[in-house]
Image (cartoon, rainbow, N blue to C red):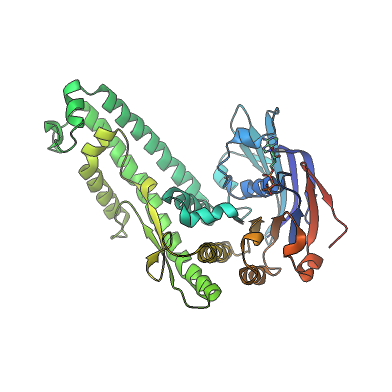
Length: 399
Ligand SMILES: Nc1ncnc2c1ncn2[C@@H]1O[C@H](COP(=O)(O)OP(=O)(O)OP(=O)(O)O)[C@@H](O)[C@H]1O
């Protein structure tokens, strides 16, 4: 797939900007804080409707404006598509495909595919499990756009269940609150699952919904990791010269021993039952995929404790190359690669591995503060654009 043009209106620091991509590789060069990452973020939004910077829509809209637009023309084997995303300060975003507004965001996802790789990705290993869950979810949205809807349903049930648990905690009698201060002592009505109060029947409804929607999330995450793991291990072995074995394992908060959805739901409900008292005591949901972990180990040692920054970079590079390959396998066309200031973070040998893997196979947008890290062959075969205070101009070097 090939992104031919991108048009930004009142997006971040771009007032009005049209960009035409004239080569498989585009290098965006400019000083810090000029708008290079903003442009990549716009492409990422067209692909996933998410920003890895976790920006809110009002942050994406230019200061002082009420609306922003990102429009792209994409060429795929199946034909040309026009994608349009409108962000509003005081309203919902809307998405359009080929001139028509779409009712479901799900139908917008999966048209453009992209893998984003920035220095923030190094936190995938060092950071907490939430970052790894977000990374996997963003990948899954591209592999199966319906997953965006599934995840949204789960998060909605989770929010409502949390609100219910919180209000129950606030309204419980002082004697109960006193017992809650001693979590080892369960109040009588919670020692038997048969004892039913109106609050408990409402909780039962939330439990059932959490288990149903949560099981869908868990099973899809598991499938994605199973497909990604061997590809990532192979890349990792190739980059590290075969001396290190990377393992990627999904570690769901609810056991996935059984692959049958009914059995996973049953395991989910049993775990909720076990944690019921703690949940009421803490006023929040303690069971479900919002507490999953994705375990990364090298030679059986957890990566977080393992290794130097260089080894962690090798690992992230392997994960990103695996993402590219998996998306290509699943959607049947190579996705775009968005490299946000990462070349400078990699040593020359890792840079070469990455550049060799890309070749002209993946349309690649690269940001950099200086062109010194590219060899002349790369510079000659790339389109080079200068970014200066939200304005883009062509340079005389390159295409
Ligand atoms: N909503 C917004 N409205 C106007 N300007 C914005 C908005 N959001 C961000 N900016 C501006 O965008 C600029 C940052 O751009 P960007 O993050 O793309 O930097 P960059 O060129 O990639 O630089 P670096 O190399 O530091 O990452 C800053 O000047 C910031 O003030």
